Structure formats: C-alpha cells, structure tokens
Length: 202
Image 1: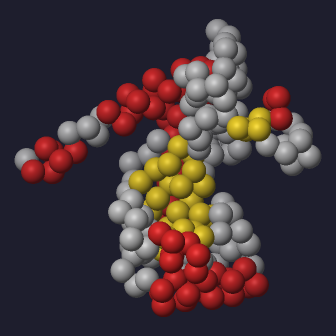
Image 2: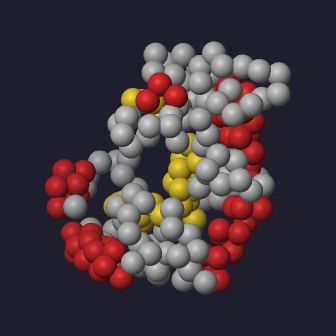
C-alpha cells in the first residue's frame, strides 16, 4: 500500500484505491487485515475513496469499512440464477444486512467464458454466442462496472484444471486480440452512454 500510494498519488487516472481482491472478508482475521490497511490508506491519502473487491456476499463482514462497495459477480456463469434476480438479491443484502447501505456500488468483475471460433445454433456454454448473450444481460445500471476481462490469458494448470486450453477465456478478445462476438455487444452497450454529459445538462 505504501508503494502503491507513493508511486501513484499524483496519477490523474487514479480516482479510488483498491485492495485485497476476493480475500477473507467473511472472517474476523480478514476483517482485522482490512481495518489495518484502510487505516494506512486514510493516513497516506484522505482525498480519495477506497474499496475492496468481494465475492463473499451473504457472508461478508467488512462492507462497513470502505467508502465504496465493490462486488465480483458472475450470474449466468458461476451462479445459476437469473441475472436480474441475482443482482437485486446481492444488492438488497448489502443494503439491508451487509452494512453497506447508502454507499456507491461498483460491479468490479462480471463476465462469462467464450472460446474464439466456437459456435453452435443453441448458444451453448463456451460459445462466443453464450458469452455475448451473458454480457448483454449482465451489465447492470450502477455507479460503475468492470467486465472481466479484455483478453484471454493463460492461467495455472493446477488452479484452473477444468478450463479449456488452461486459459481464462473470459476475454472479449482472444490472446491474439481477435474480437469475439462479445466485443461488438460490449461496444453497443457502452455506446448507449456516449451522450451522458449532454443528457446530464438537459
């Protein structure tokens, strides 16, 4: 944290400090770690908000600590529930039971896997069509959303033994930067907001 803030304090693109992706925020030991690190962030830079990315909803005991709530959500991929229902379920829990009421909410990861060149008529899992359909449903209305991820990357064989080609295939382009069907869908989704400032004025 010291290195992060000292090296990037004046970077114009840094608007929030983030720590500890998907760590033990459902445990008392984890909470003590979050408290110490947020305390250090506040001492070093009290001008920016701070957050952490959680995947421990319904168990997380740390949402009262950051300024901004960030959740890694994968409905339609890891979670077999309708996307809208699941997003509402998580958000409602954070507001009512997770001690995050009234805080800005970011979806810090969302996505689905798709293999470049894999197609079928019924949009089965791992096809480009399935990935594009999932992202079309997944991208929610909230303060911010980060799609996981830009490009396919190789991962540990031991950690992700069940993944095709030992890759994390959630990229909207493959490892050679060839666009998948999801690339066009994501562009369409974000172009809806291209006149954001004009709408804000009117």
